[in-house]
Length: 283
Image (cartoon, rainbow, N blue to C red; front, side):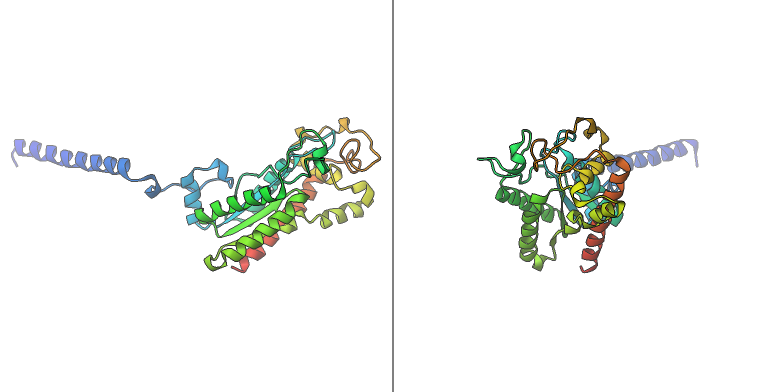
């Protein structure tokens, strides 16, 4: 082949290659984002993902989601108001990773805390923020409906606060019945809030029921110290004699510690994970 023909052939080949590359670049620019592949997320928190991450995770089998509910309430003079939120966020993440193929919705911080006028329960203490139970139930329902639209088929409520449990159970029952034909279930993971195993652990240690208490005492204070130690300052505790008055705790929390808290929280995480696994096994 003459030299001039070789030069022309070489130029044509490079021109075709250039056109192919330009075509690929054009397609990448015009293909909608929902058609572009993306890696699965490294974590489990929906709030830290893009919508493409969530879409891909659901497509890869992450069809179960946890809705954690916390609470903003007084926790004695020694522990911050956001205690429930810190504990349940950490617990939900651990549960999701223990079971696998689960994502976690953002924590719902606003929950029932008592009446407004006259104030009852935790509403008697400045800083507590509460919702009427019907409003809280509607919030849960809206979140669950949103997650169903996204493609989740098993939706789990996990609540760290006692007054949240009835509304969660009621909404779970209502939506499960409504969506049974769609193969979507909503479950109240009551094993998480059941503290009998934790109490038994402390009784075996030698504590009495009175020493264990129910609120802002050794269990939740220890758990908080294990997940967010800066939120606890036991030096601010003062003794009390009449129920929640005057300081909001129901027992002396000063024997609380982070090591105990990690052990107690693991009891709840394991129980909740077992309940979710049993639920998934019946699908």
